Length: 136
Image 1 (cartoon, rainbow, N blue to C red):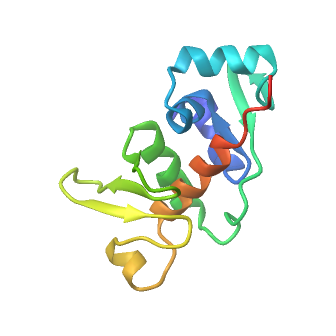
Image 2: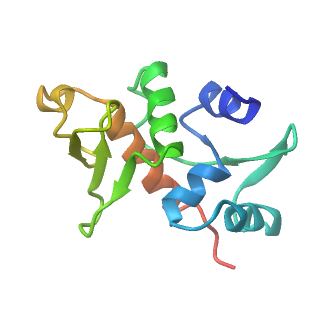
């Protein structure tokens, strides 16, 4: 795990990388880096990498390993937007099953038991990242 990912997982409720911002906005990594440099994101450089501080409500009930898996899923592109607002496709760890996830629930086996899964955390992080860009 690189230092930026370690920092993001140390305080996962509030910090993300430019890669996660790029995924949330559907832009290139370079564009997200330019936004950070231009001050359009609440970002700071840590060990040569941009780290963005977010206000992501509702992440306090998730376990650290769930937040780590959520960040990993976002970085790997396993959480994909749908045409419906706040609904995402979550690709399973094995890459064969697709679940629907929202900030309030998920169709994965854990989510169907009315428990919190990392897919829900990933959606909440992405939604917070979408609103993170300041008006230019």
